[in-house]
Image 1 (tube, rainbow over the protein chains, first blue to last red):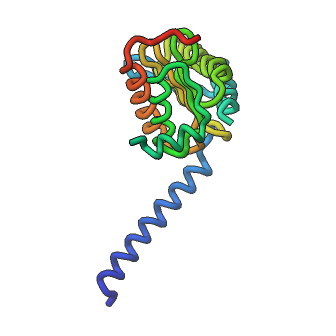
Image 2 (image 1 turned 120 degrees about the vertical axis):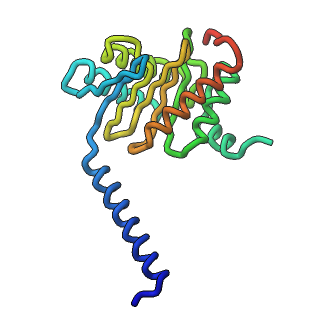
Image 3 (image 1 turned 90 degrees about the vertical axis):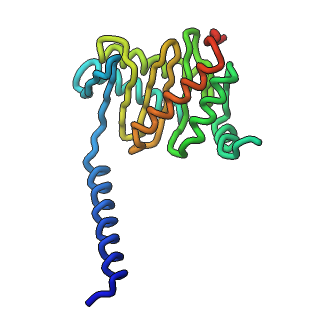
Length: 68
Length: 132
């Protein structure tokens, strides 16, 4: 039978592995996006295929260049 | 005694400011996490404080705010655009606005909360002065 602290360590490292795998998957699958929120809490996502979305991505790229 | 994190952030970003309260607000904001690359606070007359050249921030910051308004079809209060190169944020509070750039995968809710706090601090000094 395993010592109790071994059991806890195994379980904790199992959780850590799961969390690391989740973060890796999230980074690999996350795509660029644009979200805009308005007064009252409403908001929406704008894809780069729409005119408004394209303007948002262009403006964001310029802002990111400014911070370099 | 000055906060060493704030002092480090100020030296890291070559702070340009036209009002003291806004400058202090963005110093504290940039000190909150190392994932922020730069930011600016904009008033009705232009940039009140910025990390780096105020002129460039005025143009690109206003462009992001205008694009957010155009996409929403009304006045936007917050915008978050995530790209491969980094993440751009914009927040409006009354006649003040703030734009910021962070590294990829920054927690957006925390950045927005810090930006709103920075705008509150900037506003706490009183009425917004027109930027020169």
